[in-house]
Image (cartoon, rainbow, N blue to C red; front, top):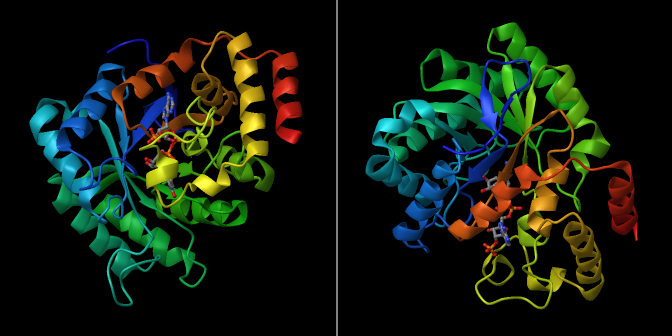
Length: 321
Ligand code: NDP
């Protein structure tokens, strides 16, 4: 293991690496196992102990968990106790009325399926992937609590919860005796909802950590799209980042941010990660990668000097322009 730093998740006993690896993209059946193994091994060698999954990661849904199960057997057999593996349930997974959202029926069946796909008896963190406005929060949180009490999960988390629901979820879980470990929202220089909507503060007050996903804006906040849209990049293959979103005005903004990063002696990816981790309530930045070298570059963010006021103001000015 290397110079990774580890941060405590809220007021829990659990330390997470400042950078974690997510398996949302590049781990489906459309990618070779060889590269998936290289990505996980590179992350591990750099001190990334936390791997984040969800029932629906693929494509097809479930295939990322299957691939990760194979990687665990091939490469990490003796390391299970050194790893933090998370999965989630909330988005559409199977047909019929019990295949998505937050019912106890769906959440616990989905967790059983995830464990089977990965070939492990428990996950470290089981998440409610999204807030379900039509299911009593007590039921969804009760399912998380049951996951822990039955030994299928060690900790529980919530993802994409608005601040008010987060507060309520934290209260219910605390009363049940299974404190909520962590919140997982999207956060990067271009998408700042948890900061604006109060979810960061709410999680911190409730004693929870926060792990932010897509700190690189799916690759926008890197040098990848500075001069065109490279073949094979997520903007050409993914469903959630589209080439038409990458307009000249956005590229101009990214170029200005890149200049600030260069002046700090960093790549833009490194600056984006350092920026996402700049506040004390952020436990970890959850990145994705298609190549091992990207992970290496991202981990370099941790060597960066802290931002000074001038740099932060400069970044704000570019973001607002
Ligand atoms: P990022 O914002 O980190 O984007 C990752 C992409 O950025 C990579 O696939 C790669 O794009 C590019 N990239 C990464 N590093 C570099 C680099 N150093 N230089 C240039 N390009 C780079 O995160 P993701 O959007 O992938 O999300 C990360 C994880 O967050 C997911 O895997 C998942 O675990 C979690 N997540 C959770 C959600 C939730 O609802 N809870 C929703 C979405 C994500 P390319 O592939 O084009 O090379």
